[in-house]
Amino acid sequence: MAAFHPTSWHPIKRPTIWQSRKQRNLCYNNSRIYSCCSSQPTWKTENNTFEQILREYDLQPLRRRTINTVQINIGLYCNMACSHCHVESSPSRKETMSPQVAERIIQLISRTPSVKLVDITGGAPELHHMFRPLVLALSAMGKKIQDRCNLTVLLEPGQEDLVEFLATHQVDIVASLPCYEESNVRKQRGMGTFEKSILALQLLNRWGYGQGEGNKKLYLVYNPVEPQLPGKQSTLEQQYKKQLAEKFHIQFDKLYCLTNMPIQRYRKDLIRQGQLDSYCSLLEQSFQAENVKHVMCLDQIHISYEGTLYDCDFHYAVGLREKYQRNIWQVEHLDSLCNDHIQTASHCFGCTAGFGSSCQGSLVSE
Image 1 (tube, rainbow, N blue to C red):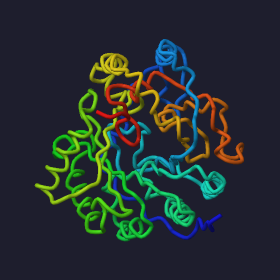
Image 2: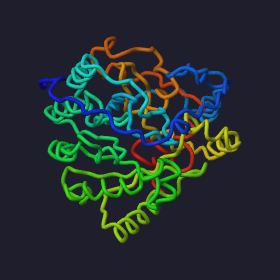
Image 3: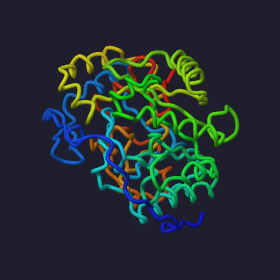
């Protein structure tokens, strides 16, 4: 196993707050689903209409096929507080991964040859103590690494060497850019974010990202600003590439279209707008059975900053643990999780609606 040095990098001073305290503290309680009083809400499993639909289509139970992707939530601290963030990250969050958890994750991945991709998310992953040690260890093992980046972090004071570090270790970037127009980005991510995102993308291009070849891939992520399903990923990708190239001389490799999940911060916004029921109905009515065969939970596992195991990032967000409620110290290798029954909940309609949705974009051919 590659050497792991958790003290090889020291974090910078925490950056400035990007959004107002009022925006961060918006909280609309919906006791049918969870309590907003806890940082990690307790999931209630009654009225799981998704499970009922799976039975109707003879698609139940879902079982994990393999583990080719490990998604790691390294912590919830972030320099931003975006309205669509399903884990409710912000500058006020303190949760972060310990060296002990990071070292155990590296150990488990080294014992699991089927793992090809490690997807690091947060929070802003780059601002957490364990980010660079994890990247160094995973890179030495020859694993492909993906960094879910909010772009603005690349311009934070003290992060001047971050892009060079990512490029040196051939870390792919999955960057949130909900629109190529400033007004729509402002709605989701706050004032000034669009300009910083454009500067960050231009910086990544200068370091060789997004050029369509090599090992420095740049993926952009689109989330609808309004409560609706994403359009065709291929069509939106063409629009993004045209607009960003013409206006800002920016290139990227691929666009991922993600459906907004009606959980956490986005759910609260839907409740405030009186659109929760209509949006949930849209997801349910747009269910496509073909998408179930391709949902990401069939081939991956999610590990929280505490070392707890989840079937996916969205289950983590609502506190719905994997069936046997295990953590990383209760398994000897990740392959032991194969063939496990996958938990489901009503928000799973977000992955199966329309063209399907996953952390890697649409699920089926358009």
